[in-house]
Length: 490
RNA sequence: CGGGGUGUAGCGCAGUCCGGUUAGCGUAUCUGCUUUGGGAGCAGAGGGUCCCAGGUUCGAAUCCUGGUACCCCGACCA
Image (cartoon, rainbow, N blue to C red):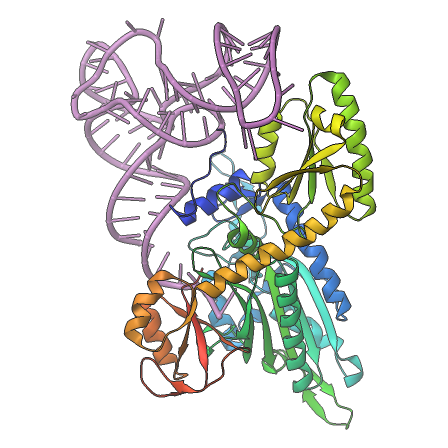
């Protein structure tokens, strides 16, 4: 076995890491904490990008691009914001190198120190709001609904492929509005877009909600989020949408003339999802045989493997395969025909399972004779042999079925590990088992902190949906408006 | 920054304690033949500054000193 994976149940972290590398998604780079996204991994990311971009445009947004470097003084304009990011910033201090006096290599030219250091963006609120100041004078200039696809850098101490890397790819939407109501609506709308994408494209069920004050984005008034649950029972924040109030408008002095002829500060939102979604996708569906990709995001949905002896037979099979490919493509199904002669069929079967291709077709001599094709679905690994005539319609339905089946499987798992917990003693026992624990909380940061200290569990969100019955805090016994979602998180 | 560990072929490792043939195994690669419905078999081949520098010794992957890189656990992670 060339590419044996560790088992999921044995060591989940190692299984995840092995899988990312062996399925050719990504690898660690020579630069500490940075990641190389390999072509297959990038192809999945591109599918995600394409769908998200379409959804952003359908909700009235446009793309733009802002600078990688942020003057240090910009970052410090908003007090909470700089405090939140200061500890993980990469800083540019010089703009030139020169030959080393000892003749070995180059050194940073001490003469070339920048007057003001530049921060490599950890997020772009500050550079964008300094720009928006020039774009906005009147209510007629609003709203501004911009999105940017970019890379950002956060100098994390410890990193993990896709889940937390020093540099990552993402999109960040930054909008400016004339009223508070409109801005809140926008941030909620984009959260809905994220949830829609997660559930209908990634097949990852998510909980929508609002963050507690201590988990809130640095500089935001409210942070809305979608929280997913991984197969090892740990939570993963999959996307966030922030209502920024007038904080950044005030910090960058962005005022506008209202319809009523008065002057007011602009209301803002920002929202983002990153390559971390790749981690969510992998950790939600994959099994010990490798990736399981949802048909809606698979770089190719179907792979055809010929099984043959000799060139003549291959030619006959290839003809059948190409006919079938044309019919599949006509239905909008992406398909790869793997007639690579240097790998054996068994090797290809294992390889495409590792890579998560939703449907695999095999055509051999037997099928030529009987007019059939063998269909194997990745999610259940079930195989069946059916007539090749009209099989394209069957496959189209099968792909839809796989999409809903893997969503349902993930949703069932989540339901099985989500439970109400009412006593803190019970909580301490249950948190070790993983999953979402729905508990009453008195709403104070102190209680939240105590729970985090003692159990490593955090409030993932205060959910919008579900049970809103009031109760008593499991720790302090004080009143609680509704249950909140606790979990250990990535 | 604190604690622990590891640097030997593209990758994964053994050998180091107790110095001694030509440094070995798995896998990958290349060649040939046979194979092809679940990661093929056999035969052969190529591939090494044993992390770096210095020291001890007749002799160092192995012992000593210094350096360095990476990994894990913590601190950090809107």
